[in-house]
Length: 256
Image 1 (cartoon, rainbow, N blue to C red):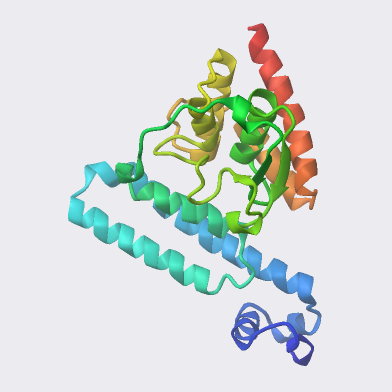
Image 2 (cartoon, helix red, strand yellow; image 1 turned 180 degrees about the horizontal axis):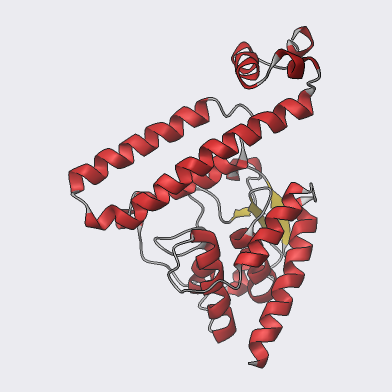
């Protein structure tokens, strides 16, 4: 493990040893270590995601004190995973947003209607490895809000101070109550389009997985986007290909 001492902390080395056999350790390089950690954390976050989604579904049907205790327990589990998420897995940011949603409607506020004319030629920021809500929202922005947008990617809004963050923690354009980011953008900019409303329902069900609208059309697109991310496609290329998917979907809905 001496070759790791220049870039891994002792706590990371300890976790590497826990996750690997000695034979595996000998062949590890930095890229393999990062992949190993992200795979392990993705499994942890995936298990917690199921628990959180179950809690959100049951929250209004259980005693208030029991709900608060369960949410506190789930929050502790999230913090425990974050403590060993040494390479800041994107799944951690997804779960942090889901935790905010689990806190309930107390975070809701009245949505102010905005003028798209004030949002032209802007830089829009979202998280790397974009999936269905982020890609769909970027497509919506480029087609119906900002005709000359620039899209950039970072894990935190602070990384690009002058950009407009979307589908990020505490961003103005993000999940709002039970709305996904795509739905929030439609409402903030008062976009009236029946085809877009249908796409919003599809993205909602694929992203939040709550079967609210009983629409499964976008689930396939979501899996394709995730597949492109696993193949290592650059974020901007995922957007480009995703835009083509949404262009075709919108055109199909317009003809119906």
